[in-house]
Image 1: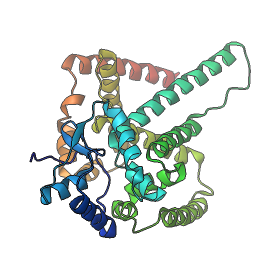
Image 2: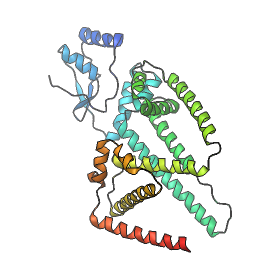
Image 3: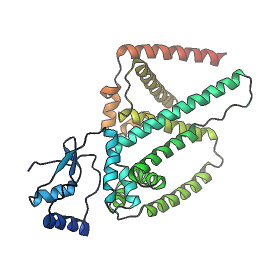
Image 4: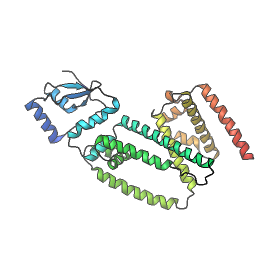
Amino acid sequence: MKNYEKHPLNIFPNITGNDKEFLKNGLINEGYDPAFPIYLYEDKIIDGWQRYQICKDFNIVFTTEELIMDREDISSFIFRTNRRRNLKSGQLAGLSTRMKEKIAELEEEAEERQQASLKQNQDKKDRSRINSVTEETPATTEIEQKESGKTVNKELATIVGSNEKYVKAARRLEKEDPNKLTQVIDGEIAITKIIKEQSEKDKKYTSASKSSTKKADPFFNNTQKEAYKVTEALKKLLQKNKIPKTKAEKVHLGRLQWYIKRIIELAIEAGFDVETIIDSLPKKIQDKMGNPPKHLQLTEKIIGDINTEMKKDDAEIEVLNVN
């Protein structure tokens, strides 16, 4: 009997208790039903892992079928075939967080739509200026970011057979408490309880935020938002969700490196203890700072060209400031 591995995209938890005993007794007493093959993908088990283990333990002959389909379609197949399981909507929402490749794909599509919308909005504003219209088209960046998040959650919910609200709560829980997310997937905690806890937490945060920022200058709040956007973009680079390929993209990366360097210089001028901040970072991050990952390394020529450009920009800014 050939030995198989479980495919990494097979993200469903093992069945336990009475359900597992029922499956085992059925296979031992009635034999394997060839109408329900164990599905393989890339020669690994994508559906039927527990049936395979029982058949292997009790030397029961089983049938397999290799799936030939695009990788982006396999997640939909997994959830479609596993809907016969007695899993609650909250558990399915929790499982959606394990679809890393699909999430990255949906986020990239959402970002492309957002960028297209921003460009269209900018074009409208430019036309308004040309036509001497005093009222500009309102900026929609923050709204569009929220909408793109909703779209990803909605599409994930459709794939797994849950709902957008549950998926949103599960994805948030993955960041805040992965152990509790596992309990949701295993059916030990209801997703509705998680949503209630998150809502109460948000109310406390909003209340504290209002009291602390009541008299604050909006400049600081906006600066924080912009900094968050930058860190999220950098995270995509480090996680290889965005890899510069063309010369133009590498030039943009060079500009980004220059701006990071400039931010550090300004932080030092403002009195921040940058050296202590760097020392407090994990060692693997410190190592990367002096030696960027291969997919982010640039040629000396591109770095030189960017430095020359930026120095010119700095000189022009200095002239403007003097005037």
